Length: 375
Image (cartoon, rainbow, N blue to C red; front, side):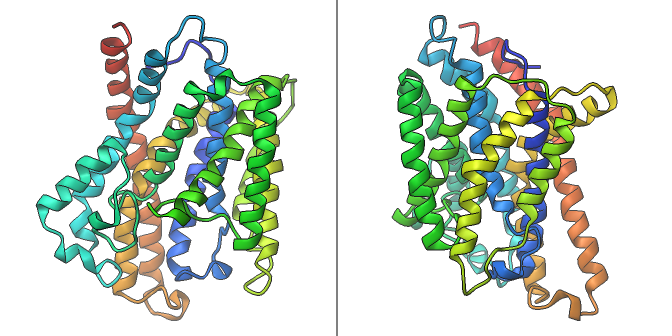
């Protein structure tokens, strides 16, 4: 298995897995809200992305800040590509393979998409370069229409580039200053919009949302990796799991009339709670072998699940739309089928992520490390 020479924080790995599973639940229930987040169960699952950015800043700072005397830019980017890119490629391939199964009133463009255009979109998606609206093949203006969540990996790559070229050289005071500015922008955006949802399209508004969501949590995580001094914290895994689950699942605050209250909630969670969770996770130890196995499973599952579940979700969305179940699923005689389809989507996504990690991601990264890192 490919590993950095430093050990991982097992609790943080597990929290990433828990957040990824909540994202899948969020997307399943989002289908039935029909765009109305006031009706959405597991309402704040979208904040998992911001939690991932905070974890990324912390882990990258911890793993690489003290290595630059013996590591160059080329080596850093090789490591990050090995860690992230194999799953990006397979995610795009899965998105292309399942694309024509997603036809329906929700995605009318699918029937008009020639195979050659699908293949071009897939190949561009494999590079993670964002697609312009002229290459739209779904109708949602996504920068990666075969695999929507890849937008967050696009910004993750930007964070890695900023870190390697610039942020790693800055003092803690400068990082703190930038984090303060980024946090202020985040609060303004959240309060004026009512939430921080967005970042997936290549237009000025969505790019602004994406950068705003990226910068504060990544900078805060990076700063935390430099200044925190982890201490022993009993039951850290239990407490962090409970807190993370609650803050991501809580209903929308303020309803449709007082959206700014939800913006305040989003700001509070990203700016205050997530750094605290990352710190708590870095302080904890897992003693039980059984819990260690669970935490390891969750950590291994997290990235493959997150980056491959959405093509399956597209199929689920299309099925719900064809049967018009998004209007009021509880009032139909198809509720049993709906429950079964939802569970099947969840289980299939988890199994796919788990087995892709074992039979694809792990061996590919190991092979690339042996072939690439020795050059």
